[in-house]
Length: 488
Image (cartoon, rainbow, N blue to C red; front, side, top):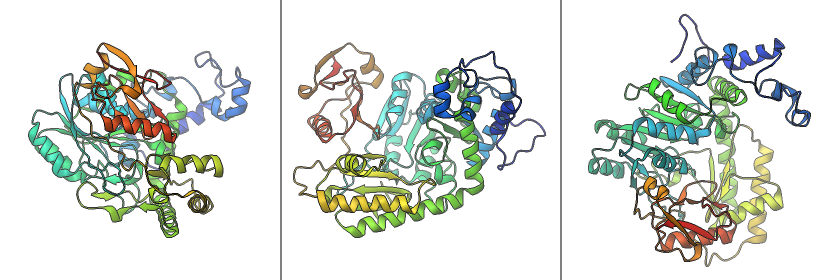
């Protein structure tokens, strides 16, 4: 997509990055935005970030192309990204994977349309339903009986939902979940296509599926129409930079660009875009080697943690061919209830007592992201800290919450509830009301409650327990979390 006639592109090239280096070398005098003028106007910020960084924090111009309508170096960068990911088209995204997820949904669904999706989606997907007036058809992802985590959407359940909702426009799939669980993506994609529906995939945590060896199947390899990929999570680009990739003729790339431009900034960051260009080049040329190392580190850590006892660092042995069809071996997901501590408690101890920041801790598990930036020393520090926490802090698990997924009771469409007349009630006494806003622990950002859902005893108990254990609970308009807005 977007390749200029006669121009041969190589995965060892980084056209946007090269154009920025050329811009800096030409010592252009700026009389455009941004106002810091290559860092000269903000000495404190320039000292903090570095002059090299500030000198290429620039605005769109002819030599550097324009993300809203790319025709040169950005177009070339997107062409290379599409090729690297086995796609027909790719879009550089500077609003994170949130913007890519929302663009996917709104490209295949309009107001009043339905989309089939598991309930353990990121809030960005439900936000798209609110923005577009789209109807969710939720599929229960299931819960692991010992680990308490939500799982992948089983293919049989997806097929049943497709059969029961033949007018739905799309099926939305997580690949993988935050914990590393993967569904039978090929079968779900085939079922969607057989029913005339689009298959769209949230691969926020699946960049490495495209480059590593022996990884779960990627969305493009499974034949999906579109995928949202967080390059910044496991691909090495800057935070907030992502890709939307697509394949096949079911959705028009030009229309997708139009939908993206509805909400994406017209002042796209060249720092973010160039980081995508460089990360793509690195992955395309060295990805297999990079992720061999990542898997080795993760497998070593799992072995050491499980050998210490108490914890359970789980992986592919949990696969059952249904709601755990496959597992992402790079994910270091650890069940903590065996030492009598909630995952978020261990998360806080690692940060506060050992100077180790992991991705998240929830009621029963923690997740450490292992990437190319890690080394053996860092892994040993993590393993040793976990062993010491077990030795010093473990206790009986009596009274611990044992599951993460709360089955929703949907009373109203998300958009209807979000814009409805509302009233504030004390959170602690809100059981039986219909929420008009989100409540979630972040990370992972999967709503416990979404607009239009009944505040059940289970959901309320989870929220209050999470707050007590120190989770970052967010979403309500009331930042103190004393009150929640409910539908009048």
